[in-house]
Image 1 (tube, rainbow, N blue to C red):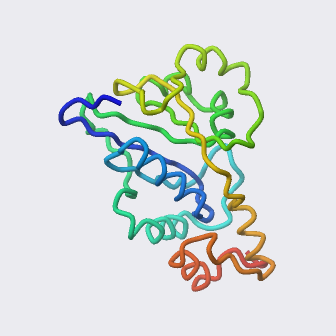
Image 2 (cartoon, rainbow, N blue to C red; image 1 turned 30 degrees about the vertical axis):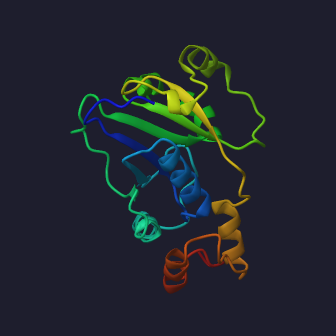
Length: 202
């Protein structure tokens, strides 16, 4: 992937992070290393419009993401700033399900005017993209994510090994009193326990 002198590569991974877990972090780290991103910003959604109401508050989810990335300098937690240089490459990371839901987003067709899209896809994700996305995929797809050029406008897929972990499963385990150690960072688990999150009464 060519990089213009001085241009930065910045990734964005938004999510509910209810709670943040190793699947989020592992995927973020793999993409950061593969594409030599200068940084990857994790952006918790306060009130996600296309998901159910989160089980924990936006303040708790923000605190957990901060704890999760405190020892990983490449993964930062910042709001997206509009002061990026024109030639900085911006990558929006999203899972396959979120990507397939793009036609329900406000002004979704304009996304590629601002960023490249990296779809994190597991080998076991066998569904096809909805018809509304097929023309865009045909025109904008690049097979090799490392070959993305320019500041925006292209789509590529990053294949990842399935970890078999989900926020839903973690919440269910916590509600039933089962351990989630090694599914979330230790600092996140300590926060969950200290604040009594995701217990059966929540």
